[in-house]
Image 1 (cartoon, rainbow, N blue to C red):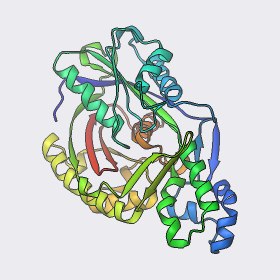
Image 2: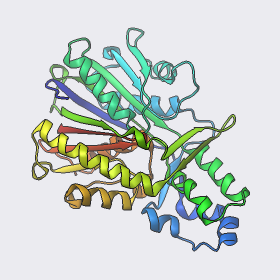
Image 3: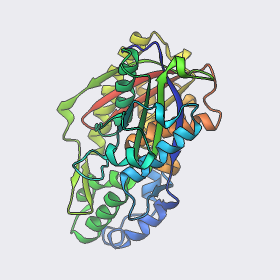
Image 4: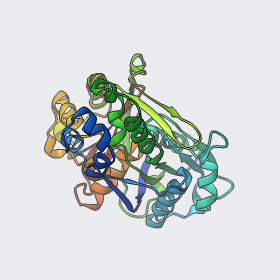
Length: 344
C-alpha cells in the first residue's frame, strides 16, 4: 500500500477516570493466590503493567468512541459537517446489530450524509480503518473521515476474576486467563483527510504492509459469555512466538515497500502488550529499543485503542516531532500484522 495525499489531521483520546492497579487485581485474587501459593507482585513483574483504567459499569463502547471522536474534532481544523466516512473500529460493540457506529454517529452529531460502519479485526481494527479511509481518499471518493475506537475491558476483567476465584484450576489451568488481566479500557479518534484540507503541518500516511498467519487463529479467542460479560483464553507463549515470527516477515516487506531503513525511523509505536513482548519484538526485528514509546505501564493492553492512543501520547509528550518518520507496528490475534509509515 502506498498513499500520496492522505493525512492524519488530528488525534483525540478519551480515558476512564477509574484506575485499576495490578496490586488491586491480586488483592481480589487472594483466594486463588493462597490456594496455589502464588507470590504477590507476579502480575506486574511479568508484564510491566502497574495499572490500567476501566470505564464505569454502564458505559457503552459507543459512549467511549463518541468521547474520543469529539476530542479529535475539537483538536481539528475541520468540522463534523465535513466528515464523509465514520468507522467504529473496536473489538467491543454495543450489540450485534445495528453497527455500533450508528450509536456513536448520533452521539457525536455527525451529518446524515456520512457513510458509517464497523470494522472488526481484534487489535488491528483502528489501523485497518486508517487504510480503508486512505483508500477512499486517494481514489477521490471522499475527502474527510473520522475513525474511532472505544474498548471496554470491565466485562472481561470481571468475568476473569470470577472464573479464577470460583473454578478449581491448577497453575497450568490459570495460564489461558492470565492475558485477560492485562486488558485496559480507553478510546481514541482520528480525523483523516486529503492533504488539501490540512491548514497546518501535514502528517502524512505514507503506506504500509499487511500480512496474515491464520493458521494461528486458535491462540487467542474471545466471545460473549452471558448477558453482560466476556470470556477469552490465550496461549500467551505460543502467541508471542508466532506473532514475532509474523512481524519479522512483515517488517522485511514493510521496509521494501515504503523504502525506509530502520535508521531513518525516529520513533516506533507498537501494539501495547507488555514488557516481554516489546523486548522480544525489538530483538527479533533488530530495532533500537530506545526509539520505542510505550503506555502499557499505565494503560495496559487497550486492544485496538492501544497503538493509536500511544501515538497520541508520544506526540503530546514531544517524543514525536514534526518532520520525523514514525513506524506503526501493529499486530492482533488471528494472527494479523499491519505496519504503517507516518511522516509527522
